[in-house]
Amino acid sequence: DGVAALPAPQNLSVHSTNMKHLLMWSPVVLPEETVYYSVEYQGEYESLYTSDIWIPSKWCSRTEGPECDVTDDITATVPYSLRVRAILGSQTSAWSILEQPFNRNSTILTPPGMEISKDGFHLVIELEDLGPQFQFLVAYWRREPDTKEHAKVVRKGGIPVHLETMEPGAPYCVKAQALVKAIGRHSAFSQTKCVEVQGEALPL
Amino acid sequence: EFQFGPCQVEGVALPRLWEAFRTMKDTVQAQDNITSIRLLQREVLQNVSDAESCYLIHDLLKFYLNTVFKNYHRKIVELKMLPSFSTLANNFLFITSKLQPSKNETLSASDSAHRRFLLFKRAFKQLEIEVALTKAFGEVDILLTWMGKFYRL
Amino acid sequence: HIAEDSSELLQHVKFQSSNFENILTWESEPESIPGMVYSVEYKTYGETQWLAKAGCQQITRKSCNLTVETGNLTELYYARVTAVTPGGRSTTKRTERFNSRQHTTIRPPDVTCIPTVRSIRMTIHPTLTPVHSGDGHRLTLEEIFQDLFYHLELHVNGTYQMHLGGKQHEYEFSGLTPDTEFLGSIAILVPTWSKESAPYVCRVTTLPDRTWT
Image 1 (cartoon, rainbow over the protein chains, first blue to last red):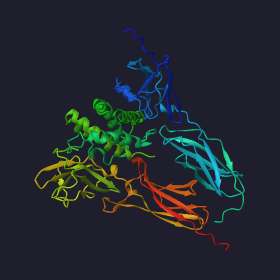
Image 2 (image 1 turned 60 degrees about the vertical axis):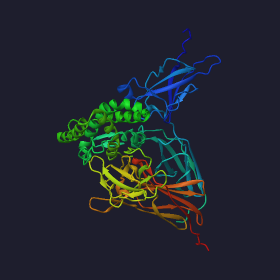
Image 3 (image 1 turned 120 degrees about the vertical axis):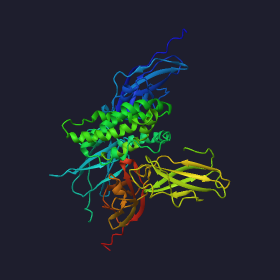
Image 4 (image 1 turned 135 degrees about the horizontal axis):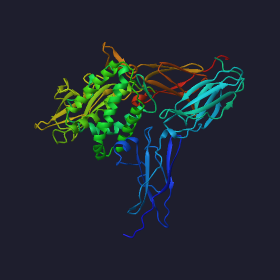
């Protein structure tokens, strides 16, 4: 019918950091036209048992940007195939399929953002909120000879939480790492930060 | 993580599987009108020893993947429940891929696990296929409840 | 709902369960028809017989306590209600498949918060349920849910929180400022079943420090 075929999106790739998975591709550029895109996925089960069935992505069954957050689609630690096509009016391009299936256990885990402060003799920590799949292992110690390192699991980020009641005379140091049970992995430790209280110790 | 006797499986969040099944449960169970038959009966899942558990879960999940899910898939598409179904199926696939029931375990454990599985399979085969598929899929909550006994956070 | 009669006399036949108290409730449309009576039956999934619930036959209220009849944690149940109008029209509707461990919600814990000069002690009292064990004793929530634990928060001047948690019943937030108000919040969590109670909240003020007066 003489209408030039709508080109398919190219250069698909997944960028995954801290369990947030972003599918990206090169946009299809047509002068004075807005091109939309549709994303679909298959888990390992679908590709083994029902390979003709693809599932529309939760957030990108019709999206403008050349990227799609597929985090809510990837719900198991198995390889997922992803595909994208362009949409212009009633025209749709061919599907472009991600070359290598994506597995969420390859996500990059960064050391968590961490702020420490003090309120009177209380050592308070606030960790970066990385979402419900994350917990944090916090290591802290009193910087003095043969000190002992303590560890505590903090269940959620984004809330300032009391870590320890300090005593004057030596700084208290803290570092933290992120834990993701869904993939059985953890990040590197954050940089160590220290704080000290002045004055007399709290009466018991 | 799951610890089915000697078999350990990390990387599956049981609450996530419950969440997926809950969105399908009432729709599927409402289509099962035979309230007087239960496939996963007490004799299949009660008092399962640790040694048996790895064999039994392996048999059950394989059956669910290869028979129940595979043949009930068309109905799932009709009921527009693909995303939740996909979560369940892919996590069951992941679990089975991690289960290695050891060969040198006592023969009796694998035998008695298999006898339990056959109880379930026989009950399944006695029903007309569509009825059996609907009933088996509707009993995933019974399976998840039993799996919960072997789950550690 | 599987309606054996198409009339809209009966709606929303369902179980409402909290701390394993399983109450069957329903509604009728219009709100009430003088002389309408209801009868309740229940059955265990996998068994053939429907059983009449004594005490809920030909009743006019719209609820029925089936706690005892649906108390086996490993069983699944159905209940059904038959509504009969004075004119003899009737309709029967069935619940969805019910299991109390899956469906029950957890009520806030019972807690005692006791302040001292520089600390607040919290004692959690275990919650008894109507569920009985094989030897007849009533089970607590902890005995039913192996992974149940308590999560305690103390909100300090609205800027940060102190957290404690675990399976034990005695907790103490220490190192506090005397004569200061704190807000305590204590919840029950059962992770495997994604259950979390609403919090028990206590507002407590630490005692004044009179050591130097």
